[in-house]
Length: 92
Image (cartoon, rainbow, N blue to C red; front, side, top):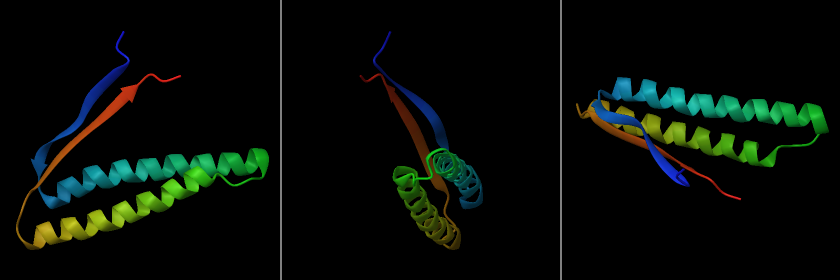
């Protein structure tokens, strides 16, 4: 069994519109995940989930920046290369 493994999630060249659809979906899913965590923490402990709140803010900023970049790529008539990997490690 490996302690660390890397998986390829996205690898290709896309129009800005298709790249946006792929990336916005991933970002929105992470935002939704953290929003559910925020609600669950609030309901269970009546406390704030600072980590998830921070991540939602970060992800919103990423989405905004990505939107600007994809708009620019579209205006310039360019395609967008997207390479996305994720790494899984076992830790104690």
